[in-house]
Amino acid sequence: MTLRATRNQAVYTAIQDLPREHPDYPIRILCESGGIGRSACYKWCSRVHTEKEDFNEMPAKKIEQLHGEHPDMGYRRIRDTPAHDQGIQVNDKRILRICRKKKIQSVIRHRYDCCTRPAVDPAYIAENILNREFTAENLNEKWVTGVTEFKYGTGTEERAGKVYLSVILDSRGHKPVSYALSGHNDNPLVYDTFDAALAANPGAQPIFHSDRGYQYTSKVFRQKILEAGMTRSMPRVAHCTDNGPMEGFRGIMKREMYYGKKYKTKDDLLKAIEEYIDYYTNRRVQRKLDLLTPVEYHERLKSVA
Image (cartoon, rainbow, N blue to C red):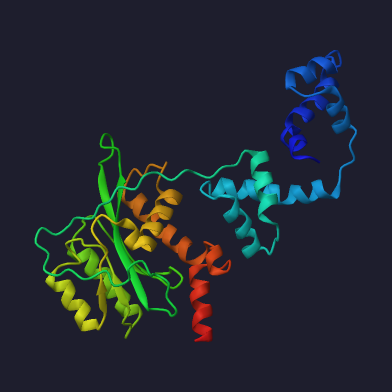
């Protein structure tokens, strides 16, 4: 079946079914109303159902199910998820054709508003050692971090407020090393995240890359870095791509679990954030990780180390 015939399938099906209920409806008028030719309609109605059409039906149902659960998924992720979970092997072009036929589109990402609070008088500023070289050969070689802002409530019936998420990512596989949540964008939020990362990875001495927020430029945080034997790196001011992996994680997370949704209470938002980080770490397949989740990729690297 051609792509055009596939696109007009709903029209063909309607024309085929209507005369059974209303035999007085002329085929010519129905075809003109649907914008198709009579010959094409007769050809479609008399066609033989092929194995190729049957083969398309199976991924089509799975695609609709995945889109209902994750409307943010584009056709590549829709293809990769069944390949990872059920071993269903279908190429990208077939999935794209089915998505077009079903009018399935991913959610468009919104603009990201930065919540970094620069220090008025920073105690310590580091050089941009990474200089956008985020590729790492080993685990715990390079860590990137940042703080993200989320809002809940409407300010009318429910009390409006904010939640801040601090995350540290390992550049090798982008697995979250640790994270912390708070109602305040303050020093304890960043310190707790850093302490949790050290507790989970004792002896790790990565290059630690962060923005120039006041928490990261403080004397206390610098002392923590020195005691851990890490090397500091900071991006240039107003160059978001200097912290690309962290900005990418923020954008993906907000597009997939935040934009277009309303969280009435703080507890609802906290639960959604925690569930998403678990999903991202343990179930979200990434093509750049050889169709593995971040935790599966890290386990594979550990096994060959």
